[in-house]
Length: 306
Image 1 (tube, rainbow, N blue to C red):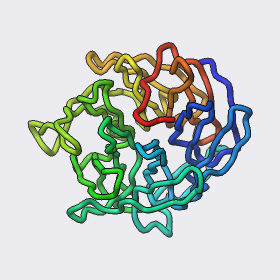
Image 2 (image 1 turned 120 degrees about the horizontal axis):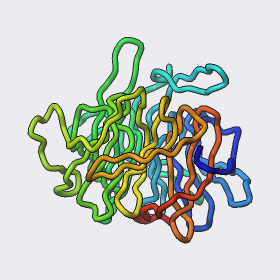
Image 3 (image 1 turned 30 degrees about the vertical axis):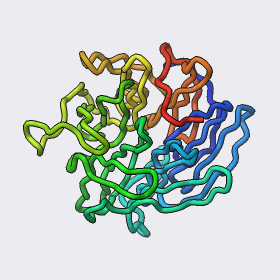
Image 4 (image 1 turned 180 degrees about the horizontal axis):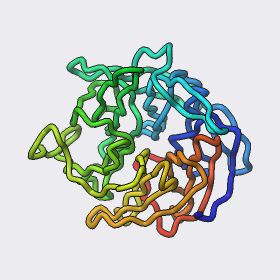
């Protein structure tokens, strides 16, 4: 087990942590439909309550938080674990929301692309140097069918949202340190995909469009993939679920894996911060806890984080 300290508990499926420069961490509680701030002294305060299912989150160029809202899950409990299931009964649409940190005001930015493709379950988000954001859509599960997701790109001013890759149910997303490549995780497909970025919202075409991206690495076990963060050296810090519950650092060139175990079957997210970028916050989602640890290497500092 990777050495760590539990810095918050009693949370309702925490994900999407953002390490702030003041030492606090802002994260979502998906079941509670809210964003929460954890202060360095351990106190918790509500930042905003968007409702639905706030998921991945990131600071934009204007200092606001941009939230992937999956539209909400139905929830169930098993063996003391809180678990997300199918779409919530009141699910209407997935959407991207802008949250003003100071006031808690929530504004809907997108619920469909420029050409009318509805967002199903937006999941994770990363800003590029230009101030636009890539985000993944995990799709949405219903009792006897599911909608597809993909890789999308939005402008922070609300003027444009496009689908770059349609089809795979993508979860975690991250940009290489130089911004030339984007990585996305296929949850149940157990594979990390790499795409060459050719512009805002465009990636190089794959030999077969139906099977997009380059396979970086895969798992032969019942290990599902969740969110990811990037290390400063270009490694992918991939949250891995179920059989290899924790965070797996992946060399994107060789696919080599270095596994760090954490005590939750759904260890879903990691975020880096601190003066040396070697502090890490890890969400232990089914047990409602936030862990803090030291990472062996610095994480990649995200654009616009403050």
